[in-house]
Image 1 (cartoon, rainbow, N blue to C red):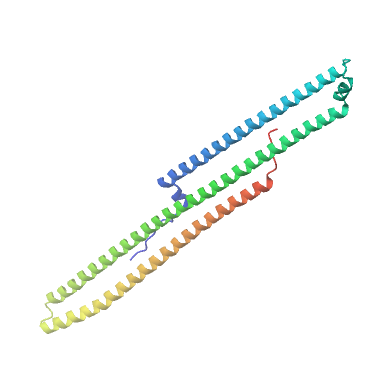
Image 2 (cartoon, rainbow, N blue to C red; image 1 turned 90 degrees about the vertical axis):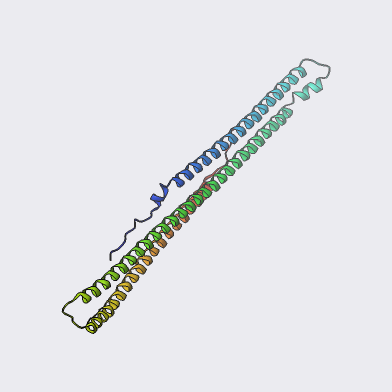
Length: 266
């Protein structure tokens, strides 16, 4: 009898499987597509916000030009000097400037909210995608692990079955050989003596054979228990790594939220 050895099934080995490599490529492509989509969204918002800023500046320049024109006409000796004086009234100019300032602040505030909300939404989408991808990866790794473990257990059972079969065949050969030796022993003249010795030999062999099969059965049980224990540990390690990866991703997301500040492109 001899011990059987199986290579440990590690996560590094499982990651080299073709089916896992295929999944990794798909997940990478999905991430790249989301990043491209997010960039297009940011570009569109930037373009629209810049257009709004340009429009506000043009409107402000037009209003300022109109105000200056009204001030010039009011000081040219018109019959309606009182209206001209009113148009060039400093208080009226201040009100106009205040209105422009309010529009600018309002635009900046709205654009800041829009930009920041978009960044937060994109960050959440990335977080959810990364979390889902982590789950997908480890779910596949677990499937590959369980498949590999089943193959190892099937291999062990096959080897033990072969060893059991070989032992039974060896025992049968020994029993036949012992019986033949007694039958061919010329020193035993009596048939009754030969039968007695054959019976004793068979009883002795039967006891020996039973002990050998018991030892083999115990060996098989120990092997299976040890392999099951090793497999359970491998699954536990994989589950802990998955939980750790998800926890780290959650922590990174929370830190990103806490570190985020209102942003604007203006």
